[in-house]
Length: 166
Image 1 (cartoon, rainbow, N blue to C red):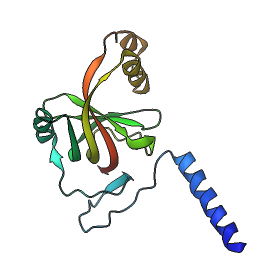
Image 2 (image 1 turned 90 degrees about the vertical axis):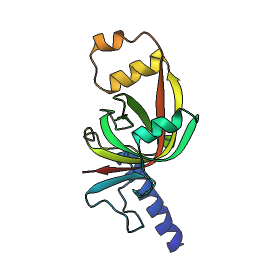
Image 3 (image 1 turned 180 degrees about the vertical axis):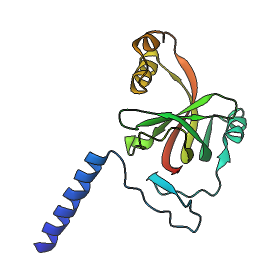
Image 4 (image 1 turned 60 degrees about the vertical axis):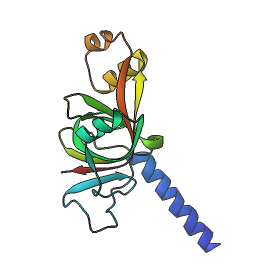
């Protein structure tokens, strides 16, 4: 009975922590390959094997998806919860990044920081409704939001783990 009570208490504490923080606690990778000053979100990943966004864009010209790690810089993130990011591509464009199963978020002050993310890249078309939602989350003005009238094809990425370098 005592073991059951301890288990129930532990599960309740973990649940409450996950509900209030909005992100998984930062964890250290299990390999020797670490980044000295960084935060880890989602699945624990390492930096090894990350490709540049130029390499990603080149791969996406021949493949419809890419699974692996990409290194870039965060241009912006959701100002409400950190539930999405827009990251820089080598050609000056941006890539939309979401987090698998809405399972973790990134800090609201992440813009401008280098990032390594692991997951899956793919093409999708964002509806006008989705674009307006993202613009609202990003703190755009009402005029900027109202100016969105056409769907937009984008390169997207669903991350399972993220390392943000400080």
